[in-house]
Amino acid sequence: MVPEKKHFSLPTTVSFLISKDRDKIVAHALDFDLVAVADTEEEAKRKIRLAVKTYVEYGLSNNWADEIIFPAPDEYWDKLKYATIAIGETIEIADMSIRAYCARPNHEENVSGRVAVPA
Image 1 (tube, rainbow, N blue to C red):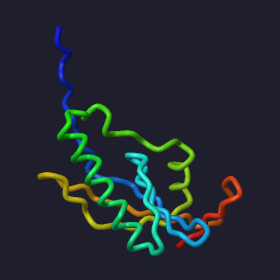
Image 2: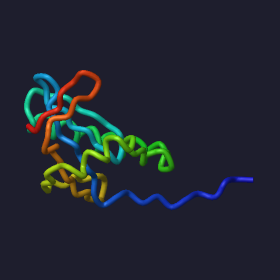
Image 3: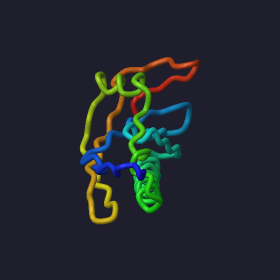
């Protein structure tokens, strides 16, 4: 018996958590648990947008729709409660668009000896 194919629905928005770790900017796509690191915020955002686009398109082209959505752990989502949210550029994936929201923590946070401060 062939399993029934589920309908895949790409989210219409994606949340990026932007933080500073030592001398690097970290962009974390929370909906897919993807991370990009760069020297500047603009470069980190460019890299994470490309990572999301590539990841989703690769998953769709390989019929992995059930595994594409892979949220980050709750501890990262919880950081959005105390963050400043800004609308980012849309990500074009095939014939769909995803709106990106960029969040920056409003306070310093010590995580495993690392300090994340707003960029």
